[in-house]
Image 1 (cartoon, helix red, strand yellow):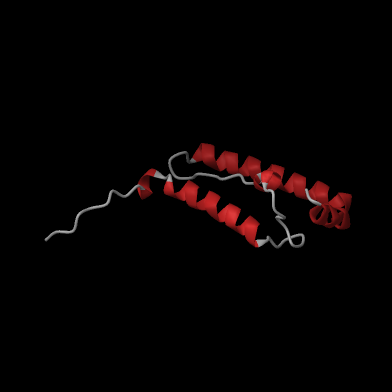
Image 2 (cartoon, rainbow, N blue to C red):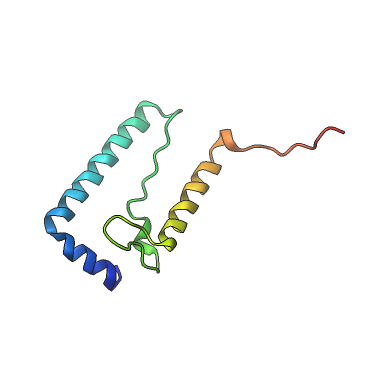
Amino acid sequence: QNPEEQQIVQQLGEEYQTKVKQGFTRLGEVNDTLGSAFPQNIRTLNYYTLYNDLSAVAFRDPIHLTNDANQAIAERFYNAVTRLPELQVVSQTPEQ
């Protein structure tokens, strides 16, 4: 975390941080359960640690992302979606 993000975390306090960690843990468990129950229909994406390696500031405030962070998550979503077999479209030559 950079200094701006550290300040945001400090302002939120320990209770908030604990609840968020618990919430994301539970969300991950539910996602895993759904993925196991419907392996052919559901693909879960866990980006909880996405911004750990981002060199730029990720959060403007507790809930709003910076442009750099939005770009990073958009690229991850795009890469995940375009790797799905159903979306692998072979280009076709138009009929003449």
